Image (cartoon, rainbow, N blue to C red; front, side, top):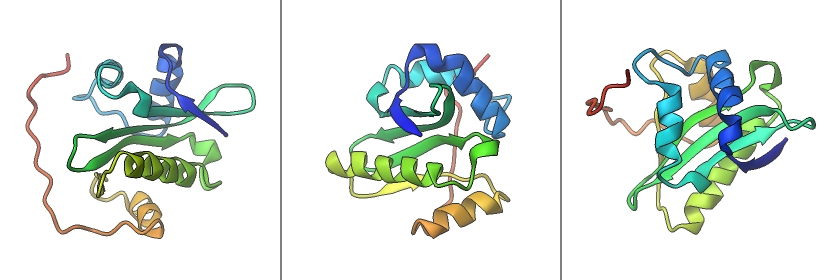
Length: 140
């Protein structure tokens, strides 16, 4: 897998990847999520490509000065369990550490035990925090 910055030409294949991985939800327009990320730290939106240059993985990384975040970590289902997600998370950790980020947070949907086990294998632990959300702008 080659890792590089997301390019606008990757939009369709990235959204298809997210759909294949079950990451999209009706209340989050993935195209708007991409447009928003390209306005804020676009260099921290990465894709992994295969030998033919096709998008096979993605990760959105963010840092607002207090905590780092990972969103849209995805590896095509046919290519999972080969270390690709681990490489992307390690790269995110390196990028955030280089920016002086002291802690990385992420969210996993309740019941996604396979993903929780993956992150546990990387040293992530439950923070015993409750995640709250409020939509400020509706995706339509």
